[in-house]
Image (cartoon, rainbow, N blue to C red):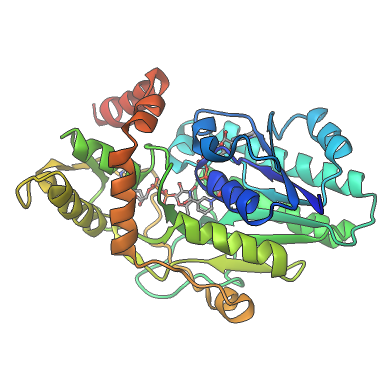
Length: 353
Ligand code: NAD
Ligand code: DAU
């Protein structure tokens, strides 16, 4: 094996696409996936590569101060791609401390273990932290987030991610740890947990349940196909300049209501419903507290310096995503368990009362 890499959060939505890409593309690497398998982590996401000879799964928590250094000792990692996090804004509003624990302390625990294990011999080592565009706050109708936009996080989730970014930069500045950070816009695609807008809407449309749209549906998000995010992570991990930040985005802005209407149109076609039938399910509900109006990423640095660009048009990606959910009912049935039903009732039924 040429290199051993630690990927955290590899059983989650984006992490599973990153693990699959690295395991298949780099047979000479050993990929160790550390994941606590929270409600958002699902070993089914990696069924197709679970027996690959260069893949190892370690169930464990990134906040564990004994386990993480022990794994560095055992595997002698050459690099880290850190994705494990609590990732859902709505959950951060009801349980902020869980986000501080995992996203802030967990990241610091990993940084510390890397610094101690690598003992200031950082040649060839890389610690790559995967972050979000939400650290930059909320845009008005104009403008884009660039790598130099001032941080202005406004939810407990984005504040915890901003804090973790600061710790990454502090370890680079203070100890010389070779770090990289990327801040990406909203992802969509296969294996997305159905608490997030697109998979939740697909599931509800299919089952003729109300599609909950927060407020008036005027908030704007910039959507990127998850496989294109994984490709960007590969390029940045291997070719990015140490100490730098790269913004990743799809140049693909949609208001929530337009996005949901497009999804309804695609699903009417796929499910042989009459045009407009699914859109009747759209239901405007109480807005998210502190709901950021608009995110939009300027990813020209990544495109110019590292030659990455999105591979897929949104309408095509959305159709592929709908197909994936319609063809993977068993995956969906497994994640829509009792805990999901409790979450759904608290978030969408009790909140409205
Ligand atoms: P996800 O919620 O689908 O998956 C998170 C994974 O981390 C799960 O497998 C979970 O089990 C694991 N995990 C959570 N807490 C852990 C802990 N304490 N120890 C070990 N493992 C733990 O998240 P995602 O949407 O795939 O996001 C992955 C990363 O990308 C996150 O850091 C997130 O902030 C960032 N990000 C996400 C998006 C997006 O649109 N989803 C966009 C930009 C950045
Ligand atoms: O921008 C990157 C971020 O995108 C990531 O860092 C987060 O991990 C990821 O969850 C995502 O955050 P959002 O809050 O933008 O995603 P979510 O799918 O929760 O919501 C998308 C938009 O849809 C947002 O404006 C809120 C709205 N929404 C969401 C849900 C779940 C609804 O209108 N109804 C819903 O039921």
